Image 1 (cartoon, rainbow, N blue to C red):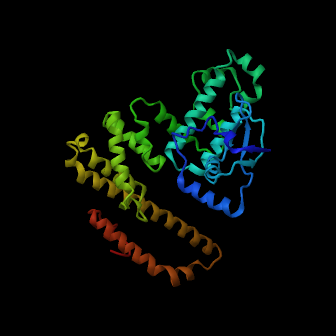
Image 2 (image 1 turned 90 degrees about the horizontal axis):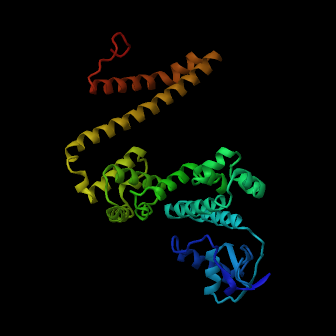
Image 3 (image 1 turned 180 degrees about the vertical axis):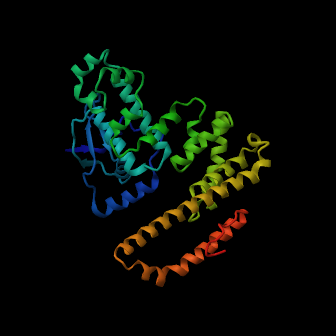
Amino acid sequence: MRIKVNDILPNPFRRIDKYPIERSKVEILKSSIEQTGFWDNVVARPHPKLKGKYQLAYGHHRLVAIQELSITEIDIPIRNLDDATMLQMMANENFQQWKMSIAVLNETVLVTKEFLDGELAKYESWEDAINTANKFISSIGIDSKASFAASKKGVGQTTIHEFLGKGWEQWKIQDALNTLLDEEINRTAVEAFGTVSEGKEFKKIMKEKKIPKEEQLIIAEKVSAERKTGKPTKRTGATTEQRRREFHGDIRKVASKYFEGEEDNADLIDLQAKIKTLQERITSAKRAAMDLNSVFVKYQVEEVGDSIQKLFTVGDILELMKELKIILGIFNIQYPKGDMLT
């Protein structure tokens, strides 16, 4: 259907102020449209209240691009979409284009929760719900009187996950809910970080140190700015524990007054981290040894084990055992007597 661009309004669930249009994406789209023309890879619905107007289900960057190119009319599909479908389409667009953004994750979970809470509030009882909206209610995993009663108090991660679909990780939905519902946490501060894991660690520290919400944003902005300048946390080979400790160190720098008295323990904390790293490597070596042993067993069954071990592995194994003896010596642990290396 051919409609005027000025008659197209955003998805009612898309809060532009929470995750604004990204200029780089608009410029790429403008270049593409100038080269190949506009394709009808967006969909809209008639506005439920404003006659002659339409609401875009997804494709908001594309809409801005055609507006800036002074295109006045486009031919796009118009469908009779309900609110649930409009929200799901917007959520899918968010997942594909913004899935690493904490801000968009939080906002998507928030508008979904508000929508589902509002839908469930329309029904007084379980019987009323299944009689008037059976398909929708069952589609979000509410299939009993008990689950309906629980959801009436406010939907949780399971219901939201059912609505958004399998592509959405449930633990991230729960983490977003924790951010949105925790009165001790500054949502904007959490959204200053690049990954959900960093945001989660930040919240943990803020609560442990009882840092006021107004100060959380100041700390987050400073730490985030420093971490975007190519810090060693990005180095290849850094373990999860090393990255976590570096993150803690960055927060300690800009919020030192909340860590007073902990400096004396810095060496001990560093030692604990190094021990943990060594444990991880020993565990990895153990797995490798077990894999090697399974290979030995396989060849022994085939009656060629002795020759393979003698020709290719004995020297390497002896070297490995010598290294192990050195490691044990560092920790003042005696190597078993009677062994081939004593």
